Image (cartoon, rainbow, N blue to C red; front, side, top):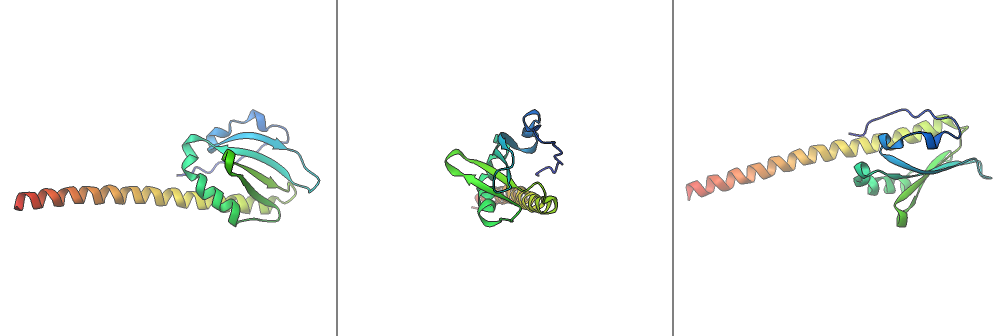
Length: 133
């Protein structure tokens, strides 16, 4: 399951934080540009690499005027753009991303259990038919 952790970082402190605990590796951060956005570039750690496709889809589908993700597919990394003045919108955007990833992890866990059960049942059925025949 994706673990929700609050990130409280003052400007210019990104390089001092171990983002691996959040499932990402920080590549760079950018101060406010002429459009009024700040940006953080990151890639998923090995532990979360299986969520790359889902996060890529979310980056394409869900965009807010105050916060959005872009994807650099050849390098398999993302850039999170945000307006630091729009804290509610940023929070809502990140909550949406977190909840979607969390649902996916729960689904994968349930699917794994279902597949293990199906495999076990198939083996039991084969043994039963073998003993009957």
